[in-house]
Amino acid sequence: MAAGTVNAYVDLAGLAEEDLTLSADGKSVTLRLPEPQLDKPNIDHDRSYVYSQDRGIADRVVDAFTAPQQAELYLLAESDMADAAEKSELRQRAGENTKSMLTGLFGSLGYEVTFEGGAPS
Image (cartoon, rainbow, N blue to C red):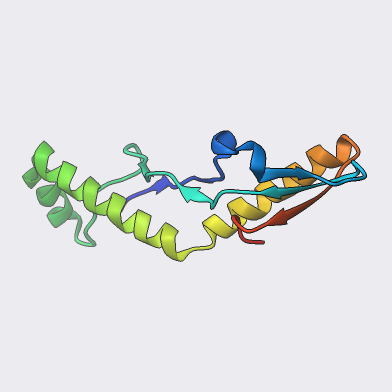
């Protein structure tokens, strides 16, 4: 049983000048965002464990796994978590959250913002 998290984000560090266009009247901006990304899964080792319904077997199974074997199990868990994150709506939500944050930020500065390409709505 593996517990952990996978973070989704939109990396704004790589935005270039051509990714932001100010309207002729200076009242609105068009922004092209990069695609949302997923971080590497982060396994919570304190909440993850080897489990079997038969408690006696679970004790023996846990005792049978050495540190290298447990590391292999964590790598498999990370892979499974990454696959599940890819199939989820995490990227879409990261894009929506980023657009919402930027709409509020630009709005507070008096600009209407529209988005083109990149992060899905």
